[in-house]
Length: 149
Figure (cartoon, rainbow, N blue to C red):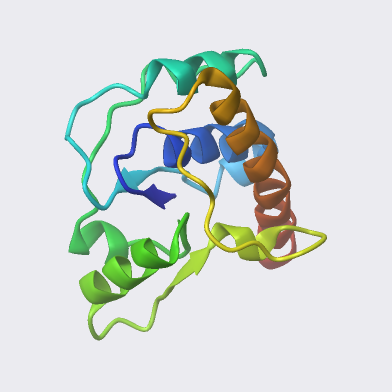
């Protein structure tokens, strides 16, 4: 999962997806996140932690990290929140055949474009972001079940 700062959207998406993985998928899937402009070591935003806690998901131990070329090339599936993240990750990948995908593509009813960044907005924006991300992560889960099991 990739967003800008790796303190809001991508750690929330990481937490949502991991929380929904079956034990079988947890044996073969590693879910991580990073940012295109992350401040390494920063905790997830307090409102991201609070909104996820309301769902029973703890992301309090998350620490931001910058996406690297090695990280991108070592990933089988890279899910980004915005078209700009896609461009940055493609540049990191260079010649590699792997490509990033917009997480919104996995929405089961209608593909979404960019996932709005709640940073700097009130707690309700984080809740809205989770409501947007949840069907997308459910779609990723269905994709994983079809392609890995």
